[in-house]
View 1: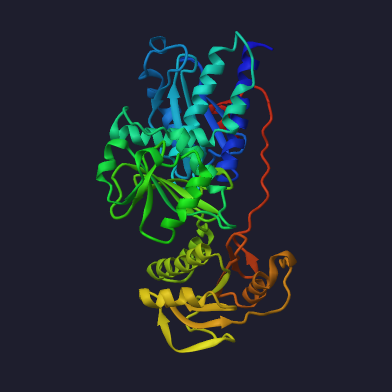
View 2: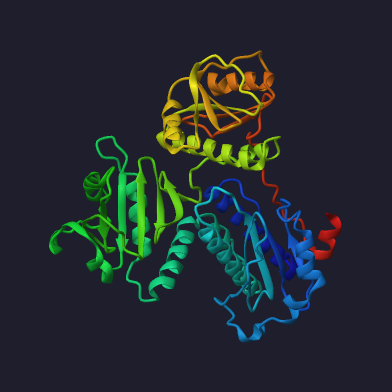
Length: 478
């Protein structure tokens, strides 16, 4: 295998492994790479899933119209052969997460992947892209020595390491390099605890890890003696204590290796928190979400419904933009409440000038859902069988409404009566938007008898197909 062929193999190998790993972490993910191996080499693009299409003007401005990426760059000879990546500024392209860097073996490279709106944080994904840049540089540096597939195994299972790196960077910024919290044992304990039931119940409550120097700042309700503190690695022991902080403002406190006690009140400024909500939970750094966890794995999702199609449809309707935004916020609040409480519900958004008549319990005086108390009542009413009828004026007109209509082609017997009734009803009432929340399925947005939020099957098309295109050829091909 020639040198160029070997390096092409490395590029596709890392690209494929990165895509597979991020797909497990964030859902179906595309990945792209722009790189130039040497200072005088042409910029090349490896974008098998057309992730970068639509960004050609900005990319052309950066890499064709300007030459600063080539001329104003550090001398690679001043870098170490291994383990040294000189980071490049984020390009901040809409809908994309990126990380760029330079090394002695690759003059310039920048990696891209999808930025989904339901991500807790982009930090773990950025660290993932950073490690891909490091591994590709290492592979190029050793191309003449030996050929291995180790990079793909590392990147496919990098989720825990990406979360670790994101947390470590955050702690270093806050307390410096002398942080005494050891993150890998913390992550292992959190995942193990999330899989440990107690009398058939999954864990609920909050576990907070605090720097040992900050323990004195915690408002303790109870402290365990030094010699009897449960080890964090003993998930069964911690699980038996966790019910003491369920559904309360109390939280378990750890300095890393062991459980110190039970605290309440203001949380320390610098902390790692694990919040357990039964079958899932969230990991936070200083109060900001980093990722979620479930079934012994970390994920980027904030576990909230993606209502992008609903928002787009409302904004392109005949409603005033302000009214459309208000209606979207009200709908999102009810939908997210139903998801958190794990019950199904149906919302009929009636966009007509006057509210139509739907069989159900009519309210003599429609409830203005812009009032917090009324919105809270609507959330409770959504638990009942039947749909909520909400007008374009953001008022609740009816509840426990019955939806029906003639059969439509898009029906799916596997989805149940709530979904199929919504399809039939929306097909006969074109001025309605219907949102269906199932307790065990994603949220469906339906208009005109069609599910707008339906996901199309997506299959990656990675294949080794020679040297990646030069930037000019990629622009021309597009």
